Image 1 (cartoon, rainbow, N blue to C red):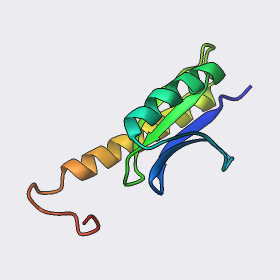
Image 2: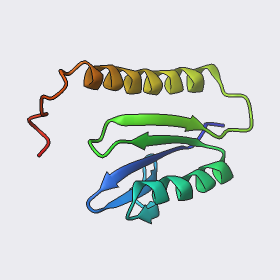
Image 3: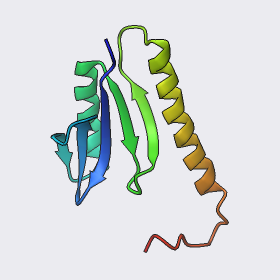
Image 4: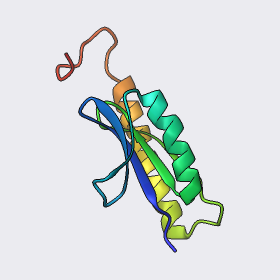
Length: 105
């Protein structure tokens, strides 16, 4: 039995929680804080994996709410997503301070 993956990301003006492979929003909230709070309770119910994205679209955090032992493949996938989040964090922190990102306005 595979762990369900839920993705929380910014979509337009709202934050949306979607199950991987679906376009249907399980949660819609105007702020990220509200969306994370609502999303955690839903993901706990399904005993899934919550992937939280930043406003820019990069992975910010990964949380597992599975009550059973994860398979090796699931652990490997979680570590890959976490490593990607760490790479994004290092890349952003290595940018010289005081210098604006040309993409952001």
